[in-house]
Image 1 (tube, one colour):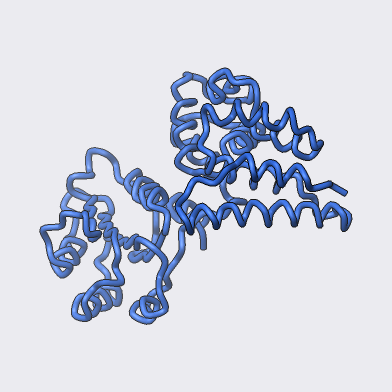
Image 2: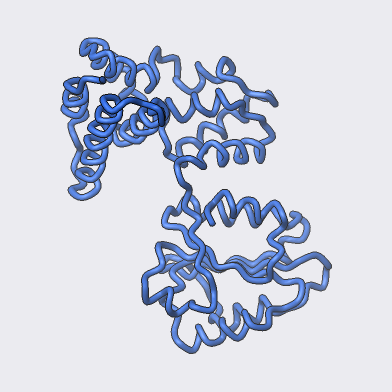
Length: 301
């Protein structure tokens, strides 16, 4: 299961009484909470929606047993009752875990209990929750267009496939940045959105996008590569450009490519991956100009 499947469950109204989800990305945790929250009419949220944050920064005045009692309380106003617990549930004490297992074996009627775990389940964590199936919500890159389509629908707009590809190609697969752009686009007052409707808004009037940079790299046009990069870096962080390059190159890779082309793309992705690892492991700013110089030296078959 993935975030796409999760959204499918949400569209069905989360019909099961108990869900155990996990997401490493804090943005996706917030997205999951927001999606569940929208299932409850605003007039009922004070009574039929309860959210508890078990993370160190959370302020939960109730014990875990008391939280389960909230979930067990029958709604006096009709409708289904949703209880959401977020945070690191792998740190639950044994007695708390036993209470959770007891609840899951006999959940309250009309009540939906949702746990959204922060992080990845460890082997020890999976053993603790062996009675439940931990489900990762992290989005695969292939699912980003679907997520964008649904995100736009929530805002009352219909993003065309070309507009979605344009946004990803320009911004990269950063969900937070893409969400911000969809929010901005929703303020246009248009229902159906095409590339022509958003080009100036997204680029801020700049002349180039990430697809222009990739085309220049593949043509080994050094002057154009660095001219485009200087334009892009005015409105985008270097790290987000790496993700955007990875996405755009991936879109150009065709399954029927000959061996020379496959070798070319393999070298490209190795360079992008090593740059990504270097930034994450060292925390230092990577000279993107050096990455571009190395990409320029590669010859496409």
